[in-house]
Image 1: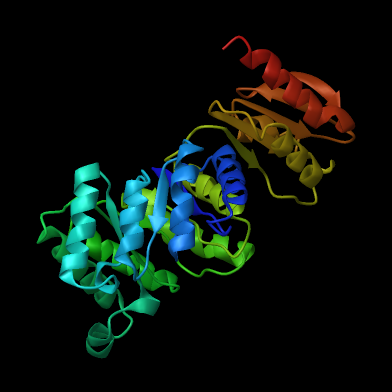
Image 2: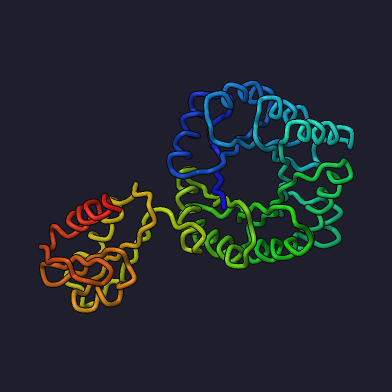
Length: 331
């Protein structure tokens, strides 16, 4: 399951775009999409492709020639809406170029850009999203092109989930998951977690994007977190920590945040517990690989539910980090 994001730089600003691609890749992004709205952006594509190794998707609207330029530049996928790039002859030119170069086409349908006849017949509904997508799929399949990925997004979480469930029964083409126009980071992540998470738990989807009005790096972080929560990705650290309550005698919030920061670059799958109660903590988190549990001014470190040693409160996070680093060197 791949995590995708999209640059918000002007594509023709090559240095800025490459810097953002690098930042996204460092955050764990598997696929990066670039907007190609005009010829100026298209001229930048070859140099961008030459100078990064991340799979790149060109986002094309209206002008089929921009799609041809992206294929020629060596881009790995083209995102189009076949119905808005002109005549069947123009769609065929794009399909032929993609087939010749082994480039998949992603059909992208949004509730805000449905065809007029579908809106009149069905309204902005899951059924309309699916019919629009399948209309475009048939257009490409009639041109003997079937290397297709589909996305059908709505800003309404329930409609998005219903549409993806519906289309998963209609086609075997890979599905790119996302809820569109979710808003700023806090609510956007909540909406995306509900929508994307529901579909992942149904076994639906091949790639995801968490669409946020925020730094694209935050999209990647959220996407990886959603995949971890769904049990699909197990790389890196999974921190479990109890909620605070009146029994807590350490700065649990600050300690958990520090542990998370110390271990943010750890790559191997690891479950780490940060618990507020020294009596119950190790037992409640005995499935964790490592953990700490706080008491009055001090806490204990434990490994697989077994207490290793006591540590003063102010040293807890650092001591846990050092224990993990020391033990994991021998793994």
